Image 1 (tube, rainbow, N blue to C red):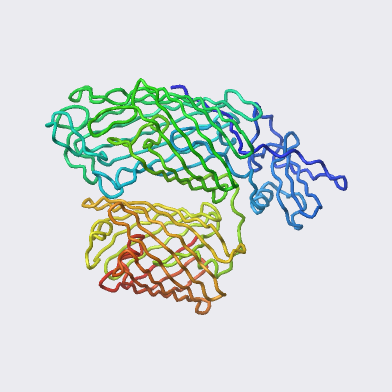
Image 2: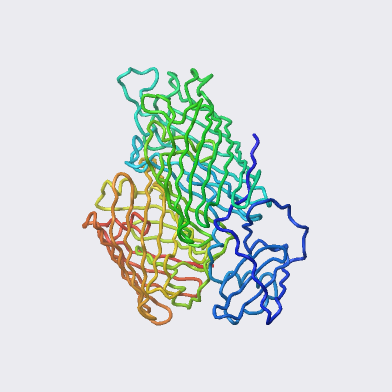
Length: 637
């Protein structure tokens, strides 16, 4: 299916080119041999400085009170204008030195990339610059618990890669999956009218998309976007997830499941208008091509969504360089539908979204939104929660590796050791960009955990952790679901610095969010865990940590506050006392005392005693009747 899309609209027009200072000649800085000019198209340029390797760049500094550095292409407008230190007032000798210098300069508003989508359902005409790419991962879920799946069931997990493959083409690949039973019980075909049934459900969609501009003016761009997808639908018969026993499908009266791999696709014509420097308005007519029936040849064809023509509109307002508010609405016009209820009545309903995009720096952003949408690919984004049109939320991480990073900070041995974190109470620091952290943990009652962390920027660390809990006494509903003996728990998440004492803030603050589930077949329950971490380095030997934290599961949501200290005992050792006060269940409060040996600049060993259920997320909010004695090996590369 045809798919092609449009030229990127920046959130602000480039600043006018600076006039040369009469007292000195500009310094030429040629990064690479000149290359043939790229195909041009009308509309505002959004090429950032880190992508201009094929042009001759001019490096200037103005000897004025603000000491401004300016980089501009000889054949184009300014690429950057930033404050510069006196030590950097000469042209960089090489491309690597130039990029390193740019990386150390303060971030300016034009470093932030525009929004490519206003929620999952409405694309804009903005595109990524050539040779840059962006990864986004997240989930959609309804409010009010997991319905028939219990816990935090009915999530749609999704991931997407967007890449600017040329000056005009943007290519995308994407994947989404949902494997929980239908949210509401349904009146299945072939069953008595008064009987409600739980029906298992599996939706998996993946594919690719293209986008390019068709036309553009001074402050608007019209693009064409299209996708081609495989949409795998399974209904009934059990799906391998919690609550998915043998049960009826929703398409016919056959005893077995209905399983179909469908070809799907979408087309969209987004037109985005830069109304002001910070306000962008988008109007997007489009079409979604979904199958009209399911089950043909498997007991009889039953109703499904079919093709829909759609109209959509939205706005994004960047009220601060790092913060954007956005809202959008999509209206399906038919002839198909996009929603059904527990009575299996199919209908058309609008998809409404309102959210906030927070760019921690141009390289990494977080996005949260309220929406009644549940699909996460271009063709399925107009769909609501299966079996009930219900308000939910979307959470998304956005990573743009080629974008500007937060300037690095100088860390001594003490500061580097604090990036190792605590055991059950975290610290608000992350290692520098590109650093890999690993640790492995075991204790006397059988807990086994491991951790992988990679710094995606100077302010953000991606994290994966996993392992098994054992011997939690007394047993509770919480521990049986989320920390059952021998059940493998896995967590995906990130930690991001908001304030940094090393940059002059009074203390450091970071947020950490993780998602995952207990893989024990008797549980299969998932939960989200969030902590707001605050660290104050009182002096060279004492750091104090305060960390409110909550585990949201849809069944029970324990919360509390972590308190800890890190005391430097000479060059090689640290004493780490920790306390978790669990406000939701005081008896679950717990403490840990650890001695850390800093064996080298890249390795450390923790020895500890604790009555926490474990070091892994929810384990920090559960106490244990027996004391655990454990060890942990930490490595940094």
